[in-house]
Image 1 (cartoon, rainbow, N blue to C red):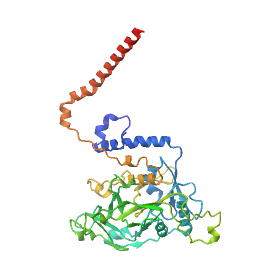
Image 2: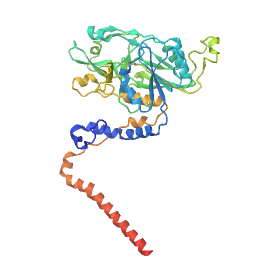
Image 3: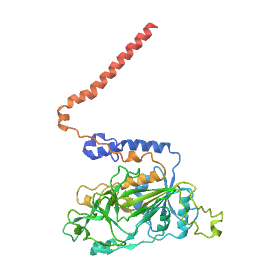
Image 4: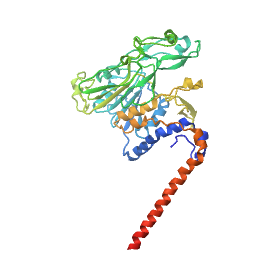
Length: 430
């Protein structure tokens, strides 16, 4: 019940593990039991496609999140290649940080996948910039990305803007030429979870350079914010200039919004739309193709679909190492430090690292999108364990040992004597 503990060596528990490890194991106990039952009764694994071919995150960068999904889902890498049947048999599709534009044919495949009730999960960046230039000069310009996804997602009720969200609730950044080595970096947003089942009761989700999402409701679809900024946040202009000097302009107690406690200041940075949609290609195709039975064109959803967008492409990316295999090829594996749960900058400086909920958020998101809500609340449940008075336990050790060992044994012996007496009395009469 203690993940990572040495098997067959329970006596070394006090030496090897901290109270935090024990606390986490107790919190995860119910989830581990339910997950085991879930794997046991599962007859068939739903299929999820990680889309490739447009500069998406590499396999090595998504190994950690893939390992979380593989016990419950069949995860496969799929390149669309203009093939109309590329996503046949898949329930979910994940687009993780694409870098090149999707062709109209590829968009058509994705659109028809959603029309058939597919679950589409998109994580992408609206802006990019050279990080090395920012580190070297302290200032750099951002560039808009044209992925071709925007107009299609807009038809589903989700619009992503060409700006950045700045939030006081953020992670630090190391600045080599500043007076202080760590500065609060407003662009490293520690996103605030909403009350939606996907995000409820999880730690803040780290989204580096996230953009604003606007949700557009419709008659046949429900739109919901999943992650937002805090109340003390603001937006940059379109395609802004990024400067490392920016945090110092706001002083020691930064105020980014006019009323930093108002709920109206929260900015959506992850949202979803679910229900029935009109096809993005409705009234945009020539009749020769649209009316051809072999094309299978659907103008309106035949089943309820779900579309989720996170306005940051790399929030699921893990750091990884490479090593040569026996065959001479390179193998990749995630490093031991889990950057999806802890802040690496503060860990390197031997400070108490910030704890993030990226890993749990991703698991909840996929489960909800795939229609399995059985463990959403259990995974994020926290059990408060009150500290034990160690001095009292030490002074009254013998007393508690007798209570826990002698008293249960006494009641068992008493029950055995009572049962023996009742049986003797019953059979003596007969």
